[in-house]
Image (spheres, rainbow, N blue to C red):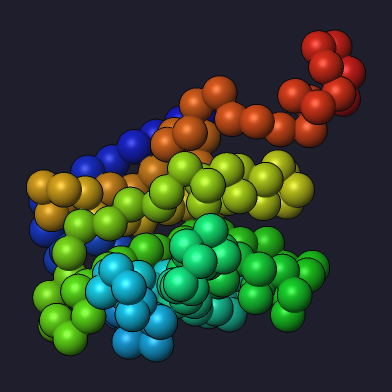
Length: 160
């Protein structure tokens, strides 16, 4: 069942989400954001409690850049291929800044998260801060990316 919850204050989040947000903020310090000055950090937790982080890494040729979410997801897949991802938290700050700024996952990251959910046959909870500085908790990437592209899209109708 799809669910989207909005929390007005950081303190309203559950302890695990707050912990992951802090880990994501720490990861944002390692962002290579020389062009946009927009440092993004992501932290995910696996079913066994292992935390994996990632930061965005920009390239002068923008399409070669990598979002923090995908860095964390791919690192988790490479290092812990048999572990299910339970939750992913994304935060951002301006380079040199201390305070978090609103940031939600881009469409490409949402598509990648959907594929991870499909492969592990379980949703991944997502926590992000919207433009109103409220915290959004989605129970699945499907909440944020309706009509996603999938293997079924490639196979055609009626095939699995």
